[in-house]
Length: 380
Ligand SMILES: [Zn+2]
Image (cartoon, rainbow, N blue to C red; front, side, top):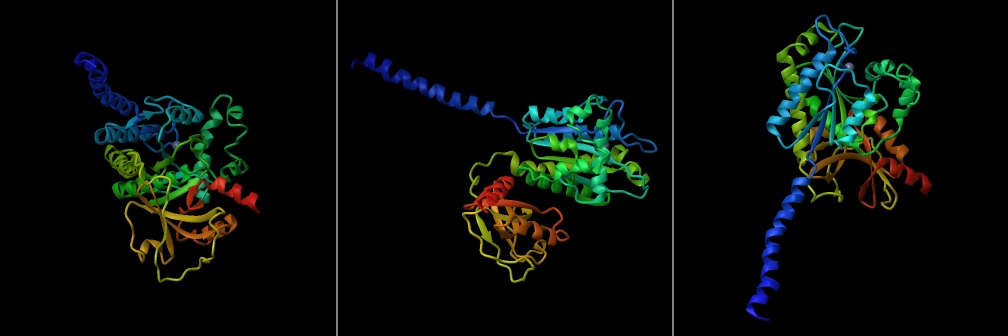
């Protein structure tokens, strides 16, 4: 092979390769979907939402939503923020969820303000989708769902769901996918932030049958900023200063979540390491042998970005285990091959761990809880 031919046959392709490979990688990286959050300012247009003495819910929701978006944009310009509405228009609930689904969003945050017949009811609260953890939570969901009554063709679109009938809410008793866990985590983070910044009464995190959350297919929460019907709450949530505080609180929760789940951590995926936390305290939870080739159910009580000491007071005297997922320590209590048994444990511990939920493992790997229930029913 002469020098010239060697050059054309080997060197040129090599040079081309050197030129093209980094470019190809760069291109691929650029195409990666950005972390996308959909912000949903509740109500709008002819639907003002709840009314206070001097303010309308729709305006408060919008102001806080916009503040939140600009805070996200400032600190995390790489995050894509999508609004369900940016102007004063009425948008059907189903369309709000569709916007998030079509955008393949990573997170959905619906922002509302609460209302009550009782003028003394007050405080901020964050909801995830669920059966309804209290009478008040159910009432809040019913109230927010009623907006569909004024939507065109609502019977057909929502398949006969009557927002005023408690029987309709049975559909929310069904277990949903793993997004529920992430929803519970972001809800907790947002609630902590809001309380810290606004100093409003902490009504905690609850679950209830919010239609808008039911329709979305990603981690989703609904925030109730405060009670527009309570004069003290209204003074805060209708003021510029108060809205800034609330947006900052929600943003702090978002940041915490985004720092953990936003940047893709591929390393620790899929292989949850299950370890028992040594604890001297005895517990009411029965400790039985479980067979690992059948689905194992556990009660997840909370997650932490750092590993906790065995006697940490957050375990409230219970013996906890943990597994890691995406670099996060997730603490669980109890383990059983019986879903019913773990539900009973959940009930027994509902005072101590209000936001606990059931997770499932098979052969040491985490699986979808609903799937696990199906498998264990077949095995019976
Ligand atoms: Zn509302």
